[in-house]
Amino acid sequence: MNDLPTSPRIALIACRVLDAEIAALTSPTTRIVRRTTFDIGLHDQPAVLHARLAAEIETAEAQPDVEVVVLVYGLCGMAIVGLAPRRCRLVMPRAHDCITLFLGSKERYAARIENDPGLYWYSPGWNRNKRVPGPDREADLRVAYTAKFGAEDAEALIEIEREAFAKHSCAAYTDHGLPGDQVHRCYAQDCSRSLGWRFAHHPGDPTLLRQLLHGPWPGESFLVVNPGEQVAFAPDATVIKAVPTVVGTNST
Image (cartoon, rainbow, N blue to C red; front, side, top):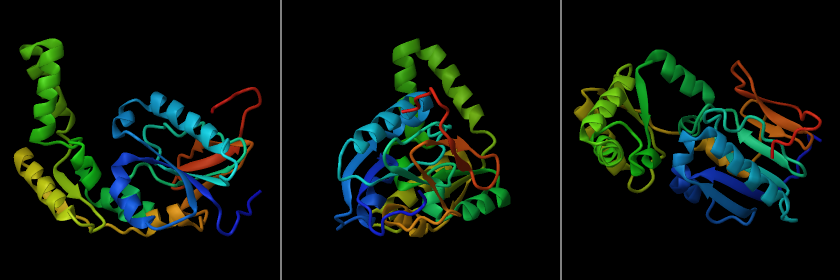
């Protein structure tokens, strides 16, 4: 069950935070016969994200020409834990989140965090969605909170949000050097100034993402889950592992 086709036909399931990078690395290609992307906001609801991923895996497996399902997600709040393919192999990166895919390896990501634990990561996709700390995120939250809770409670909730980011001290920006990325680098710099943080640019490396999208998938960087197995969390440098699917359960 470990031998994969040389050039398998792929169903791609990805987070929209990587839309531009995936498009740049998969055009043109005929191997990807199905593409599905999910909204970045689902990261706030891991159980909902898990259910959406499981349903899409099942739908992809029902498409006869799909041989491998490639998941462009990290652990993402444990949302991928328990995913269990029925017919196709399921391939995913050994990553806690998408920043590993920007930086090119889980080892490089771990080294950056170890050297500077105050980093908060910015990337083009996260910036586009205004999901990063900064004046735009705060303004959007103020409008939403005021509409729902009133002005006084809105300010209290904003202050709680600021306190949640207090452990961070540096806006770390990474990209793959695509057209327009310079604009997002400047945006991250502006956010760092508004927060009183340092700014650091960590140039990205598309190698890991390219390999995820096209193969091959060596075990040190990727997990291949066979039918009859499911994804489990690994409390070590491997991040995730495959374990036998529990009889009588249905994760998808």
